[in-house]
Length: 131
Image (cartoon, rainbow, N blue to C red):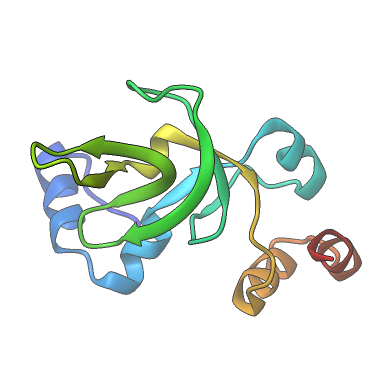
């Protein structure tokens, strides 16, 4: 899944043509310092329900819950970060996952628990936090 070429054009080509199941892995976000020390991992694929803090851009410092993940455009939508259109309706602002830090993991997902187990986190720690 990793791009073997060093050429930027080939790396971009891979990103644009990557299958959906690879895009989920590509859309990983770093964990906050406390989560890094707790779980012993640096990043994890982002999913709906995670709490994130925006680290770059106009919305820097804003914290909210991920309400949608767009794997086709490599963007996430965060609750509370909206833009008002000319007709007055509000639309979520798309944010790239590399520009956020995960502050709280959504642990009600069995696949997420299995992923953490594979990465070496003990099951008891996961169960305690999700309750």
